[in-house]
Image 1 (cartoon, chains in turn brown, red):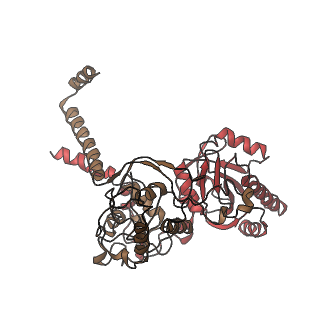
Image 2 (tube, helix red, strand yellow):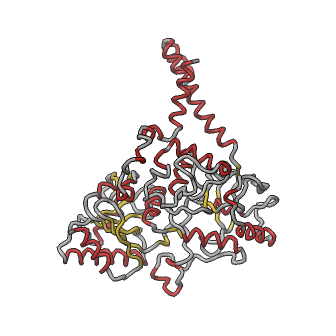
Image 3 (cartoon, rainbow over the protein chains, first blue to last red):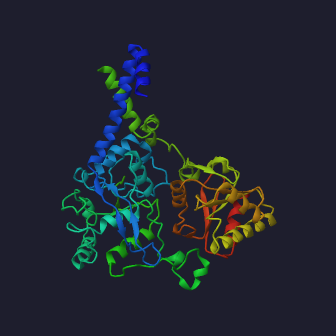
Length: 266
Length: 201
């Protein structure tokens, strides 16, 4: 094989050779620039866990190993994105993909208060968050991935049994104005992921896939709904998680909320 | 070296995520009249995802453009809610026919694209005696999730053969704008039929 390639290479003239060399160089640059993006990602080793909702009979689910952005996407980063993708500027965005609140706190298509530069971007729809991640060659984390990361504290992978952990999350939920702070002020969790509970709630790729009310809440009518009644909460003590699932269940993909941002995964 | 930097630029432009075409749009356009109408901005036909119908043909959603669409998201092996949802759609069909309003697409979108192959979809259409106005579509899981999010339909896989999902029948106008949604099973069709009739006039 190698022999054939070298014969082929020998038959090429110098222009073809330099073209080939620069193509290879260009490709390697493309690869390495992608790779350098992921160098900053936090690697999460997968494993089994029992999510609060979405499994039958409290079965554990397996989350494959994945990488996730250690920081929330900031206003500055989102600005770079909308500059390159004008259809996501707030005056251009189509109502199908984001409601009227889209980037409402930005002062124009490309400006916002200077102090918000490194604060998490919020008031973006699921569609916008998804487009952003796809532009980085990434995707939104699944709800299971996000919850898997979120159950860690700075010392252990699963701190859900720790009442202090749950209390601290609930306390963080009570804080106001956390979406105005620059990301990364507090220490990361054991995966090296920052601000997962402190700042804003976060979009996940399948945020609305788990239905905890409405469609299948009425167990008396189990037969009316496919698979109804088989999804129950696994851990009612985890009130913080309950709030998150309830919140996700209440929003739609085009919604934009001042307390809802995102980070990407890979 | 110059050569290399050109290649580098080329590589970077590839990474820039299809932004080149958007950059071509005039920057100041929004200062003047709206570039697009509010209606266009709401059309589901903005979605460019590719779908497969019961004949195994690749189609885009905008192939439905031009006629009102009555649509539900289901899966063919569903035993509980989907047959009733489909029965409700057939009820709407009958009511519209009665009013002489037959120029409508009836569309089923699979939430189980893996199992709803064209053959399965075709059999479903045949078994339910659906005429040529009916289309059954499937796409990738990601496209399906995106479409469901546009329609505010929720669904989740409970086991490989069982899904939990919203029971929603949607009415989309000829330009792709969502006009009405009916939620629940065995619901009175009157409102949806009334809205469809308005579109057809």
